[in-house]
Image (tube, rainbow, N blue to C red; front, side, top):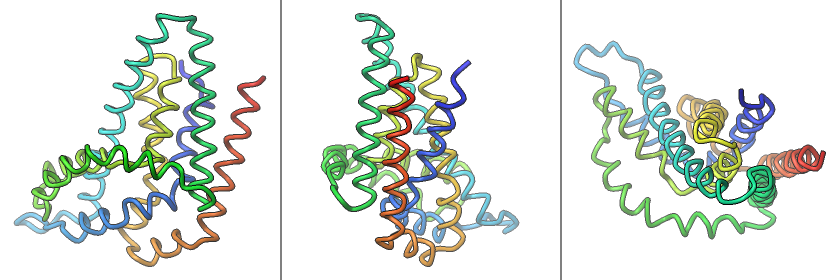
Length: 226
């Protein structure tokens, strides 16, 4: 069974990335939520659609985690498994440190990585727009699946972490817990809207989140050293 600390770490990473989620996905959450059109019976509340498109988003994270973990698992078969996992975990910690600096606004180096992944989004974004306004549950799910491939330094950090999970299944499971960690802010923005997004984007809030992520990266480095 996968180490509970590893799964908890993935969840906490998603939770502490709230300010970044607000900046990257606030507009998308607003568009999807405001674009929800209840069915003919009008009995499905907006929160049901929110559950569906967030489920689609997390499903895409899991798929990405499975893909990354598959490549990692194949590569580690060529070298010592223990050494490879240690190296991958060290790289994940470095990315977590860079994420903290990015969140706090001290060094936005991960923004370059997000721009590098922009070519995928340029291809997918027009497809996602076709499902807005959302008129059905399947439409909400598909829109969320497209949204899950938005270039994001936070997601990339989690994916590198999933590469060190040790197996394909564990890589997907780690991304599931990461996605669950992002749910509070996503539902919060869907319900509270702009007010929560503005609070999360305040410099002090971002700096607090960045400091927590840096501290968390330091703690994980200590665990790895042990």
